[in-house]
Image 1 (cartoon, helix red, strand yellow):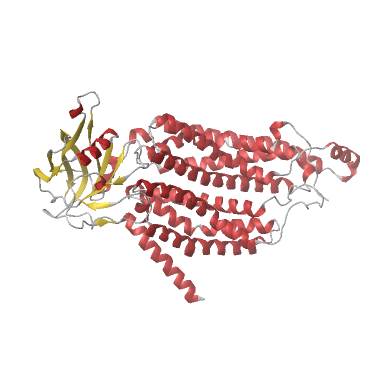
Image 2 (cartoon, rainbow, N blue to C red):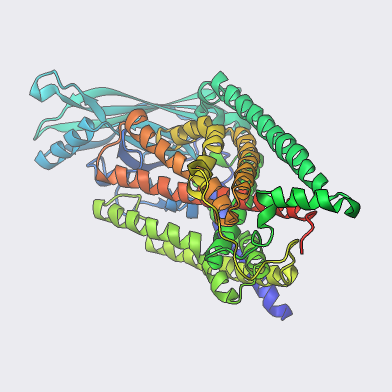
Length: 590
């Protein structure tokens, strides 16, 4: 047994070394001596309005490197992010200026001209990396109102201005010049120049130039945090004052009267209505218990996962490394699978579930297989288009191994521990044999309306932050304000719990004891409003077009909203569970 545990620990350590280290690793130690070679890596090209529709840099007929150029693999996250770094073989030496030097003589034929024209019309950009610092440029200029031969101009010269501090590279700036018309049969001399400039900026601050402080730290961002914080104060006051302190205390007072006032007590009890009358049904096991256990367990895991990744991003500045966030998310998801099994197994056991293996398998596979299903469709589209967004088969195998050998066993272990710790059902009130009929109430007290309305305030608390997150992902911004994200996440959790408790209390007062699924769906409906917002964002805030980009936009958004819905639903359900057990704990039940 000890050897098995030791082998598993070594395997986990191996996964960390293989997956996490490349995400943070870089070329050597980032230190160069004078005249040392510096590699310029070419990465990808893409139409500016479609950020996910990326292609290999040499899919356009640029100057091809000779032989078999080196490729750079930066880790799992980089592969999933659609990066393919290839050595450009351009001669660059540390601190050695180059006035103007030829890369190659590009002979234009009809096919090459058409490729470049199409790229220029669609505002294709490209990406380079030098010492892990990105630089971007455009393929050319498009002037639709000029004569036919001068509409499409290809940039024939690129100028690199590299700032350094001692023996380390600090910034890389790319500018382009000498646009040339595209003509069949013409030969263009593609050239480059390099200028090295000393700077006082330290190596630790070299990534600051890529951060848009004005955009992310604008007053509207601070105002949104303040507005959400005030909403938290209002909702917590509403729950504590209106429900817990006022209504419940009055109800408890009636039940706490002395037995000598029996006549008054019987009259009050006979006149009672609302949540107290359903005490014999409120702890009845919900429908589709295995599914509810799975989504609650997965949601609890995702909540802890998001909190953990945000903290790691704040501490380790993960936005600096290519794919570091994705790699960290995948590894942390696998290692937190114990949480999903623990919550799912405990919930399933407390409600008298018998087929715990079914619940465990559903918990371990629900979210990963949903992501795999959407990813498979998007990957098929990417392969058809020949895009770098297509995930290599080897990367898919690595992800599957992580799930099969780390995530799944930990979910199984968590389920066993959760079942054993929860024990037999221990509810404050005994469940009656015959279910109580649910009376008809006004339309706004039905479970469907409560579920739809429950997500409005949580969505309002994260509405502004969603704009910043969407803009950073879809519009070339580097998201770095994870402190804001941590505050918004905590506010979302508190608002979701408060709103769900209010909805659950209103439902129970309507003598409807089907609160379990209602509390989950009420909180999960936040994701539906986020998805509706994404539709607005797509048509109003972006210029995306084409089947490829539209599929990726809504595919990724659906994946995100599905995870957000499960997370919020689990938070709402767990908060409502504590509330329901608390209010029925002091009820005198037969």
